[in-house]
Image (tube, rainbow, N blue to C red; front, side, top):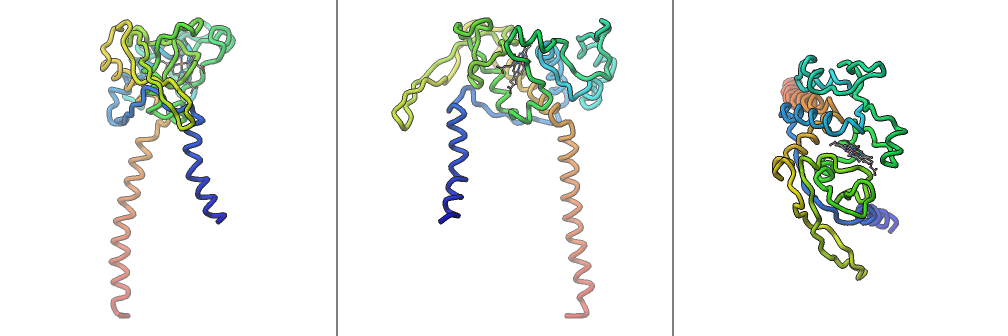
Length: 255
Ligand code: HEC
C-alpha cells in the first residue's frame, strides 16, 4: 500500500509542477540543434555579441576559445566578435572572458534587475524554451518602460532587443475553462503589428542560430563527449565478441 502511494505521488508530481508553472505558454515549438553546422553557430555568435552582450555576460567563456571551437581565426574574432573595451579604453583582448561592460548598478537602475549570465542558460532553460522566449515578445502597453511582455516568460524585465529584426507583434487570445470551471485567457498565436527587417522565417532562423550558439556555450565539449561515447560503445561491442570467442576457445576441451 505504501509502495503504491509512493508510486502514485511520483506519477503526480510532474503534473503538479506543470500547473505550478502557469499552464500553457505560447509559442511552443521544438528545435533540434545540428552540432555539425559550425557556420550556424558562428552566425549565432555574431548575433549574441551584437544583440545580447550589451547587457548579458557569458563570463565562463573566452573569445578565443569560442573562436577555436567554431573555427574562427583570432584576427576575425577581434574584428567581428569584440565590441567591448577594457578599463583603459583599449579593445578587449581575444583571450579575455566574455563579459558585458554594463555594470550591475546601472542594470539594477535601468531594469530593476541584473541580467543573468548566459553561459549556462541553454542547460538551465533548455534550447526549446530559449527558442520560444526569443520569439515570444509582444506589445503590451501596460508594461512601463519596455512596452512588451513575453508569451513564455510573463512580465519579463527584458526589452524586445531584436524588435528591429522581428518587428512588433500582438497576441491572439483564446479563453480556456479548466476543470474547476475557472476561465483563463491564453495566447494561441501572434499577429504582425509592424514588420521588422526580416521575414518570419528569416527571424526564426536567426533565433535558431543564436540558440545553437548558446547550446554550444553551455557545453563546449558536448560533441567530443558524444563522439567518445560512441567510440566506447563500439569498443565494448568488439570486446564482447572477442571475449565470447576466447571463452569458447578456453572451454572447448571441458565440454
Ligand atoms: C537591454 C538589456 C538586455 C539585452 C540587450 C538583452 N537582455 Fe536578456 N535580459 C535582460 C534583463 C533585464 C533580464 C532579466 C529579466 C527578468 O528576470 O525579469 C533578461 C533576461 C534574459 C533571459 C532569461 C533568463 C532567466 O532564465 O531568467 C534570457 C534567456 C535572456 N535574457 C536572453 C537574452 C538574449 C539571447 C539576448 C540577445 C538577443 C538578450 N537577452 C539581450 C536584459 C537584456
